[in-house]
Image 1 (tube, rainbow, N blue to C red):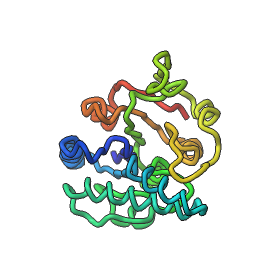
Image 2 (cartoon, rainbow, N blue to C red):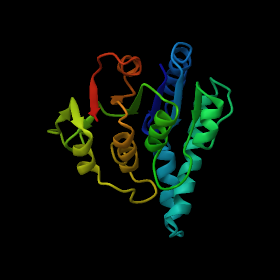
Image 3 (cartoon, rainbow, N blue to C red):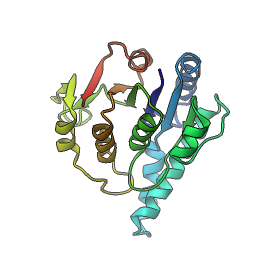
Image 4 (cartoon, helix red, strand yellow):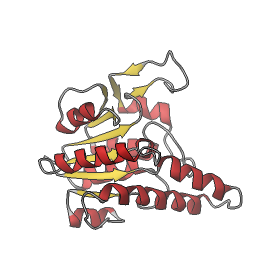
Length: 217
């Protein structure tokens, strides 16, 4: 069994190095039992750089590349515990093989899509998307206290929620539209879980019952 993991950049605050260390040690330990493809997002770091860049740069592809560099910075932090070469393409990642840690690849999609590509190309049993909320909701639970969590959601319904195309650099949505398209085309079993809850993340990686959302394909 191989597993692709999209580790949301929202989980990796530079103000909380203790959690970065905790989740890195956890992933290193679990990767000794389950081969992991770990793709790390850019989070706040990426959005801040993109926001500054957008003040004087109108080229969205270039701004996207700035965000990609931030994902790779975050990947280097996690990779401190793996010390393997960090690939920059899907082909290179497959050649290196799991366990591995990487960031973004090219513009036009998020690291969720990179993880979905790896799941498909690497024949992973499933994809885990680790974010900073407890799954997929009908609206942003950080803003709306009455947001309703989906225990399961069909991929077509999810696509209706998030749209069917990438909009701009730093675009933030629960699962990016490009990833949704790959999940649908590849019929990839996908779990969305709160990565801050290490136990639930472990359950999702192992394919056990977990608190989160199952994307049905």
